[in-house]
Image (cartoon, rainbow, N blue to C red; front, side):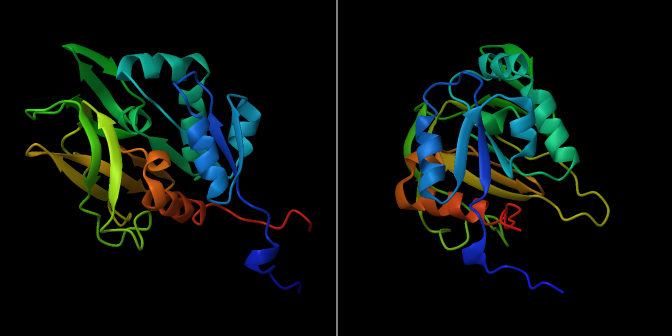
Length: 227
């Protein structure tokens, strides 16, 4: 029997950042590369499905981001990957669109429906929530391992302000991390099997964000391509 290769012999995990036209995502690519991944920015279906990890970024409005994701078939890519237990990471609006819907300026838009609930405007005196903030990391978290006391960079006016998914039988319940702005509590991150997401920008969160991305990369499937 051939012994399993040491971690040092394994190729870096391959990550696709979904290129759906959302703002400047080069910083996401660079941050993932710095964390140890082999990264490609593309909307190619086959490459996105084959990658060890798929990152869904998003900036701006919920409805506009959904249109961009749908235009490149991102909804089907996320569904296919998750059906096969293949990891997906959403960032900022990329987290928001994982919920059933978003309500912006009184207009409700459908999301990807991976989690029940709606994204709504923050109820705080100062909106948008822009800057560094702490989080209430979930018990048993993997994403925040070693960085539960750190601060992360947020830029948003909307968020999921409740968690509505009920536990399902013996399945491991999602780990939900919270944050607060102006007295309003909202979902800052979710770890739900193959699907993880953050409301903040890890790529803009300095050493703490780099550590979080490295934590996520360590959860991805790894193999020795030389075998």
